[in-house]
Amino acid sequence: MRKKADELLRKFYLSIAFRIAFYYVRLFILYGVLFFIIIYGLYVGLFMSKYNNFADSLVDRLQSGQTILAYEEPTDIDEQYKPYVREAYEEAVNPYQKQGVTIRIENISEGKDIYKDIHEDVEADKNIFNMLSYNYKDNEKIIFKKYRTYSYDQENYRIYLQFDITEPINTLHRFILLLILIYLVFICFVGRFGERGISRLLQPIKNMSATANRLTVNNLNSERLSVSGTKNELKELAGTINSMLDRIELSYESQKQFVSDASHELRTPIAVIQGYANMLERWGMEDKEVLQESVDAIANEAKSMKELVEKLLFLSRHDKKTLRLSRKEFNMKNLVEEMVRETQMVEKDRVVSAPILEDVSVYGDQQSLKQALRVFIDNAIKYSKPGDSIYISCRNRKGTCIVTVKDTGIGMKKEDMDRIFERFYRADAARNGGVDGHGLGLSIAKLIVLNHTGTIKVKSQYTKGSSFTIILPDYYKKGLIKIDR
Image 1: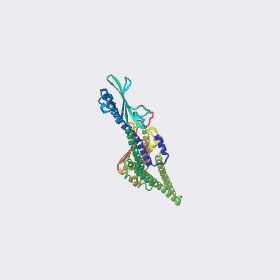
Image 2: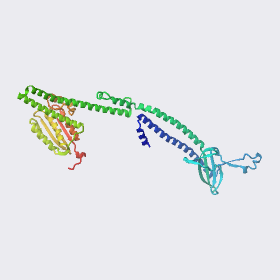
Image 3: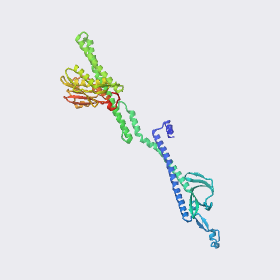
């Protein structure tokens, strides 16, 4: 029934305030009905308990030999004859009739009544609480019937009791009717003014909605939801939305900075290519030296642009969640040995060594991890001088792969270490020292390592050198994969 009512309400356009008010009105009605039923039951139960106790007390008196009846002299006998006919005319009278109690006492053994002032049995409607309702002399009567069995002087008796509860029940009905009227008026006030109160309660949500409608790219950094005047869940909701807006603003600013930095990085090679093209167009076509210089410069800048575009595409795929890694199990020691040989072959003026190389299985994308390792090795070469040493190691620590690239180069300052993984960030020493690069290598390396659920630890001392450590967890022990070795 409740589900059908909710479905019916959903078909209409109703405000939240109205729905909440309607919900509470419905609760008031439901609990009001339960309240009146409980009150009615308690009231009837109380005086029925009273009558039960009364019946028990009468039976106790009868069993002990006491009488429950009173005796009165007839009033229609002449005074002068009363002394002589006292015993013959004395009548047994029920003294509780004025209290609405009628009695019938039956001798069970003889099957006859010894006393009876109960009305003759009539057609009666029985309802709850063992009450009977019938018409007596054109008056609606409500009675409560009880009987008890007892023994006295080796005879068995049964006493029937009828309690006239018409007046207390009618009084209860009038009282409940009055309460119902008052309660209905109260519910009307709740429905009428409750919606206004709820509307005021929901005003902070309306203010939040208005603020959200005003949000644009231009005022994203200044507009926030107000938490003044809100409490509890609404204040928490406003704080959560403000935190979300802060993250959106940070992401938007990062995207703007990304586009700006990418444009700046692309502008330089484009300007160089355009400059050499203009120089060739003016006078360099016949000068072989100028021609060769221009071709070499254009080729170098085109290569640099290609590398930058590839890095930007990699970051874009990661941001759009379209980056796909081809994972398989391989020995990291072999990959590190290969990288060491390549570096020793190319960089003759650096002392490249691999003091520790241990077998360790890794489950991941071999080419991506090679790309990340190449970034750290290239940085060690870029930020060191001829004659400096570069140490590359691969260790196995209970199944965990630890690869370290350490150099004795120029090192980094603390403020640079906090930002080296930001996109397009380059330290002042790198910019002023004429070190080539776009500031994207470490960002890409970090993303590759994180996609392998790994971590990177950085240690550096200015003018003393830097150390980058890649830690890749044991997938088998972590339960990340299940492969038969």
